[in-house]
Length: 191
Image 1 (spheres, rainbow, N blue to C red):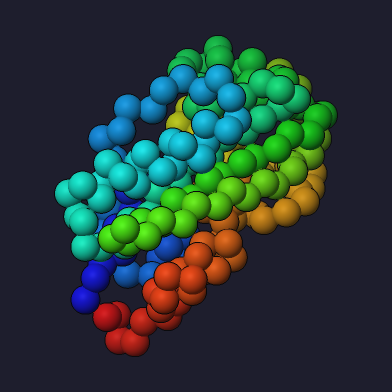
Image 2 (tube, rainbow, N blue to C red):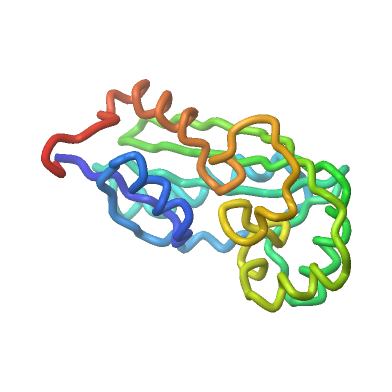
């Protein structure tokens, strides 16, 4: 049977696939992500990640994804330092932003791509809260410097759109893509 391969080392994406009962293997993409200058790049990056893994596993279903946070016209990727994380969080305080995730599914010569957008509103928070949150270490590997599924949830007032998209993998959209490719949503006996 063909395997589902997640072309990502993201523990959050892996957890979401486990949550919906999808058996999969993780093969980290070797695609070197370029600095983001345009939000349209998120689609190309997801596809490039999937293609880099498909070269090694041509017969399997490959899932690539990329997530960015956009505040106004500024793209907020993963912070490179605590100071950058603090600046990102300060820019999000009391504001709304968009979270964009692009998904690429490749199987043989078929490819499907999709992009999901969720709007997130943050409450106002203090510099003391920002520094205490950064001290947890959680913001340092997340686009926008916060994790809605973790301790960063205390900053989120509300969202409009898919919660799972903010975590890193829009599950409803992914399920539709699986169906389009004929991939089963549920597996019997761990097959």
